[in-house]
Structure formats: C-alpha cells, structure tokens
Length: 198
Image 1 (cartoon, rainbow, N blue to C red):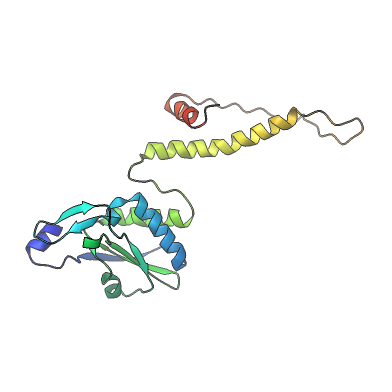
Image 2: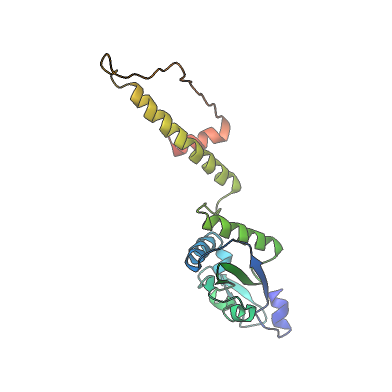
C-alpha cells in the first residue's frame, strides 16, 4: 500500500484516526502505557525508508510513538514521521484520547490490539510481546496464580510446626482445616517446575 502511494506521488502521511475508549486517563499514565506497548510491538517504532518509490522497512530503531496534548487530527498528523519510526501519535486532553496511525502499521485488527494493550498497560497488566506466544502467557498466568496460593500454604505449614502454646492459653481448633491437592500434568507441569523447581 505504501509503495503504491509513493509510486503515485502521494504523501507518506496516509493515516487513520480514531477515538480510543480508555476511560479518563492522565497524559503521564498514557505516555508510560504507550512506551510499554511500543516495547511489545516493534512495528510501532520501526523506521521506514520513503526516499524512493520502493519504500522498505529499515528496522525497529526509531523514535517510537508519542503522546501530545491535542485532539485535533491535523495537529496529531503533523507529528507522524514514519522515516523516524513514529507511526502512531496519541492525543490526550482532559482524559480523552484520540489516535492517528500510519496505515503502514495499522489495520482494523491492529486497532483492537493497540487499544486492548493500552488498556492492559494502564491497568498494570502484562502485555504479550511479539516474541512470546499466547501459550507462554497462559502458562505464566497459571504459575503466577498458583504461586500466591503455594506461598500462603507454605506459611501456614511452617506455623503448624511451631511448638504448641502453653496450657491454659487461647488455642484455635483445627477441626475445620482442609487439605487441597492439585495435580498438573504434561507441559504445564514441566513449565511450572522449570519456573519453581521445588
């Protein structure tokens, strides 16, 4: 698409614009979230050589996306520079977010991914990088969920080995204590053991 534009002498600023539904957000928080997303998606910071009719990607070494304090689409487009690796610009005013992105890096599916990843980053959740697989992310989430429970169980097991209190002191009944055993087989078990060998 980009090559076709260049062949016809059109501007390399062929962009799409859209309002992002991220809820009220501060500019500083949006900047941090956008940097996390850019790290997970190298295409958002890849430089594109547009010096000839045969545009080509140079590499993920550009400036990356940016946030500006404006919502006017023309003002946002002025900051797009795919030769410098800035293919996405977010505008943020009073908590509202508008985005422009060069069509070389954004299509309809990419908009959904960008918005979801920004929402996750703003909420403090991990973002799946291009180098990780969905399976790896699921296994890591499973490990994280079980790690807290395992640490809690270890804590109470250690407490159970302490000497009993002296006679006539307050004691709690252990009649209600239950034991939970979890059996994990296959790749999930090997992955969990690799992360936590004990």
